[in-house]
Length: 240
Ligand SMILES: Nc1ncnc2c1ncn2[C@@H]1O[C@H](COP(=O)(O)OP(=O)(O)O)[C@@H](O)[C@H]1O
Ligand SMILES: [Mg+2]
Image (cartoon, rainbow, N blue to C red; front, side, top):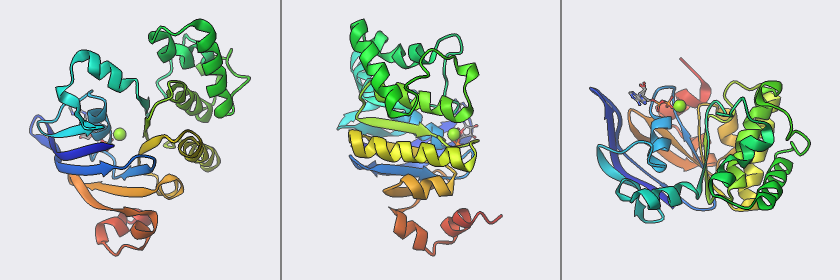
């Protein structure tokens, strides 16, 4: 389980997370929803120790992330897949080599790497695309490569940062379906950061809305759909 307990984080005078608390249960997909610039990506980065709280703690499976030794942090990161907002592929590497990157860092034998990469590309529907380069792919395909790279490491958790932002509705639906299947088939606990309501409703078991630095509302998809909370309603309905 991932747990934020009373996390406060500022950059200069700007307080981004303000006593932010959230429990992310295993085996489910939790969507963290919120306006742009509210600290969703900042929250994700705390889970893998890319940022450290000023106050409070983030723990994963009972281990406080910012207290881990270097080695333990490396171990923790190998159990967490991170799908970055802009796919973050290496343009000079083929699709195959991009997906293989983390496996090779773990010094796995090359036949094992090849098998794992093939299986991961198959899962995201890109089985025959291994030899292509990122510049030859559409935005949706690049996202799928990013997901394949995360899946290849057989993580317990996958963090998706804005997985559908900038994609057309059909391509977004393909990515949503992929996240749902990853949870169902691989038992992965997902954390999805997004401001795309349609995607949130499609993939979430639970939705938490981040507002003014903390969780303003949290509930199941149905609870959030039916809520009368004005802040949530305004966001869901996209009213100015
Ligand atoms: N490393 C950083 N240094 C300074 N400010 C940052 C840093 N990371 C994020 N911020 C600021 O924190 C706020 C929240 O950012 P972010 O988490 O990226 O928002 P979003 O909810 O859109 O993902 C923004 O105002 C951003 O400028
Ligand atoms: Mg962001």
